[in-house]
Length: 201
Image (cartoon, rainbow, N blue to C red; front, top):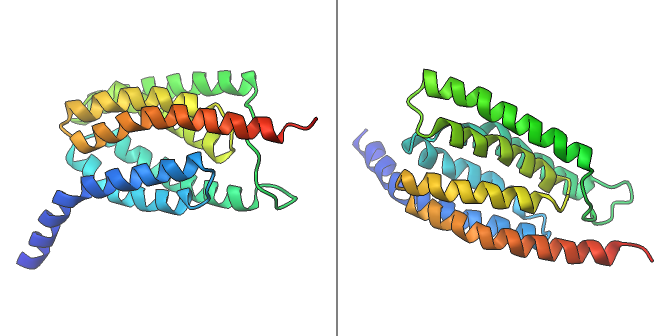
């Protein structure tokens, strides 16, 4: 029993650094449109469970379990088998109506879950945390579908996340998401170039 306790305490010392490194590698692979981003994303989710639980960022923890985990599996499948031609899935744009629908859904989810977490749990920053939850699901879906707008949504998510993690003393994750800001810009530019190269004519 003492060994398990010691191993657990050791894990709590290394989970945040491991998650930070995995997170950087995942986004780097996404920018390069490499399918390895998705299985490594699954590993990132599992590593982040203890980090987020200890920080009382429950909506963020829920996000990882019910959204990031299945969306990483979905993205993995879709990038491998998402086109009938079995060619590499191209980067495309999202329609304005879909973007508007996603914005309304994100606002409703953030407000509804924010009220619940604020009144029923000891969650830290429940409204901001749930805003990240809702927008991240939208961004993850856009990423899995290889829609270029995903990088814009991730940019907003990253700004809020830097503040949340810093306020909760998660310096590693705060630095990670600060780096994500630059990577989101890099990803947008890279994907836009890729999209331009696939436009016929």
